[in-house]
Image (cartoon, rainbow, N blue to C red; front, side):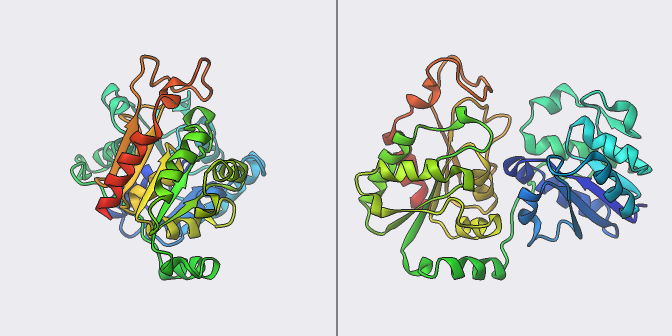
Length: 344
């Protein structure tokens, strides 16, 4: 039916992990199609070791023009474009590139740019985000075949890690295998200060974990989160017990590290969703966001939060006293981490 199929991916790591089951369903529906995944450069490493895409097409609207993106799509000779991204620009690119079939949810005023403008029903909006993308596939499959076989009962969100990724990690951290059990701590949040549990609270948690001599503590994050990770480490009573890796590892190496950890403690941000896809014991700290809408999807994941009247507010900066996170105690997160470690 389609020989060359483009998928426009989403922008952030956590959101990208939510698309994995839908990508697997796409492989099932079109087993013979060549699948190209158009993504931002900073999420591309997530797909290096997966069979979910035959090709990766990088596009960064902050560094290249709209016309550059159109040229890339025209060169691909695509029969159809499936848009996970809801933005107007995603549909405009596919339209301008003259891709014959353009499929996506009718959002952001882009209905006229799509050949298959699928409705976002109230039921879809209430679902966890993982099912949002599955609903897109289910609607399109139904339109093509009259029915859908999308697997809602056991969506496959797993993320594989290749031996070469472990080798790259070992080259940077040669003592990892001999360092005992590892716990990764993620004190940052890529696009929201309001999601960040206070640095002093993370330091207090690390102090409690540092009392267990068999644990090696890693502070991880993006390069721009290095100052935050350094501040957390300095605030510890025994800073020598933690190692800051923010900015030291590629995304692919970070995935390999997370897969080797006995537990991961994170704000509601990308590495938490990666850890869930790796089926690692995970504690995710929630504040202004709604875990019913999007949260790490795994039986090994647990959520800790302080229920306050103003949460979830979905704001990126708290206009008052940030009580949803400042009132969440290090002891609460520590006890949840001990429970997670017991699963390792």
